[in-house]
Amino acid sequence: MRRCSSSALIVGACIATIATATFVTARAQAPRFRTQDAKAFDDAIGANSAELMARGRQVFRFDTFGDERFWGDTLKLHQAIEGVRFGGVGFGVGPATALAVGLKVDAEMVPNSLLARIKSGAVDLNDPANTLALINLKAVLGVMPFGPTRAGGLQSIGITCALCHSTVDDSVAPGIGRRLDGWPNRDLNVGAIVGLSPDLSAVANLLQVDQTTVRTVLNSWGPGKFDAELFLDGKAFRPDGRSAATLIPPAFGLAGVNLHTYTGWGSVPYWNAFVANLEMHGSGTFFDPRLNNATQFPVAARAGFGDVRSADDGITSRLAPLQFYQLAIPAPAAPEGSFDRRSAERGETVFNGVAKCSTCHVPPLFTEPGWSMHSGEEIGIDNFQADRSPDHKYRTTPLRGLWAHQKGGFYHDGRYPTLLAVVQHYNQAFSLQLSDSEMKDLVEYLKSL
Ligand code: HEC
Ligand code: HEC
Image 1 (cartoon, protein in one colour):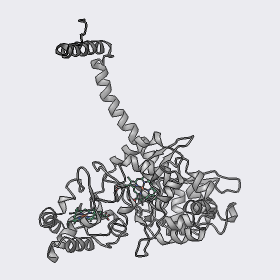
Image 2: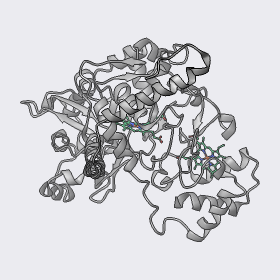
Image 3: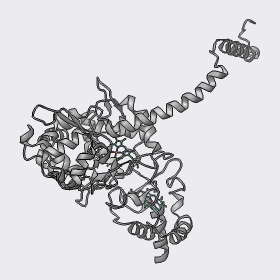
Image 4: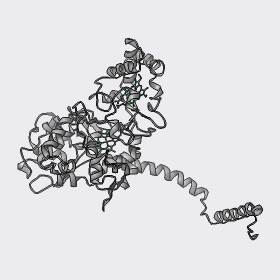
């Protein structure tokens, strides 16, 4: 190789020589991928997809990430379910009460003989023993048993993603049927369930309030709602005095969507890591320095939520399969007859035309490809919930499968009880001057998505 001189004229040639030499060496040393390896790699992609899918479903339905240390060991929720007879406290929780607070039973996990007895009314729905039996069968969606104890009770209890993001098709009885992953459980009264816990001191200490205050806040949520930001900013109520909780959103139809949660906290794996560590209290690793902002997130900053490290990380290795499975869950198609087809067709024209809905809800994703964030002013509402997030914005909600979660209303806090109310809001906020029939058509179109 030519010796490199410092003369400016030949420096370029000299660099080129070195670059070529490096390239040649690199090529010579790179392990070669033979044709049969390349074919095998295609197969590896297929096998990987099948494995991620199966593992992700398992994680979504049954994995607690070690959160039983919080829900059971710390809050002692299982003791309230058991009642004194099985080593717990109080009367215990019978299946009737469990169903009344929105817990769902996966009929496929229940032996046929027991199902038949439930159907014929032979099972005492007020006896906690029967709730324990269902939990031990892993038939109660999102509730995982640890135990059993000698008294026939549970050692501990944990929760999974399926608790809030699954429901059943009621095929056996209301609240009992086939599992539907990704559908938000708008019957689930998370606040009432957590409020059953005999010991809420951990939550009270985190929020620096007393347990009575914690119970008041939990009771203010109501069915289908949860407040993921409460444990960051300690804000339990909106300025108008109503609960600051948000609706449990669907976890279906999310593929292709860039940002997640009502206020766009991050991607699916971002939010999954957030929830598993900070909300479910699983044992893992989480890093987000945005939570160190003590002005916006006093509780999170105090508790060090911006940098969580656990000796025993049961979350990080599950993020890939969990994300893969979630992205594979499609939005369910609207059943035939659940909307007026002709009217919906006219509504589509309104949606993409005079009503300008598709400028933000871009079909077929029904959110913007790219950065889908908007201020409250841009959609004609207040900024309270947006200001509880790092970006101070609302994310354009993907609209597929709206028909499947009409209970609880629309927008992050369910402020619009019906789709017509949403359309009327836009009509007013954007001065669209839509006629009543155009608004009706728009609603039919939304129901068809
Ligand atoms: C206690 C109920 C609850 C549990 C358990 C729960 N979530 Fe959620 N999830 C919510 C609520 C409420 C929101 C809305 C949060 C917000 O926007 O501030 C949400 C938001 C989401 C979103 C965003 C959806 C969208 O439209 O972008 C995804 C994805 C999600 N959760 C997945 C999961 C996964 C995966 C798990 C398990 C690791 C899980 N959740 C556990 C209640 C829950
Ligand atoms: C400027 C962007 C923008 C435009 C234009 C827009 N939307 Fe939205 N849309 C949003 C955002 C952001 C949200 C989330 C609001 C929230 O959760 O508080 C939303 C939420 C919704 C929801 C509630 C979904 C749910 O699950 O709660 C519906 C329904 C909806 N929009 C329909 C429409 C229709 C119909 C139009 C046209 C009349 C329209 N949008 C125009 C941005 C927009």
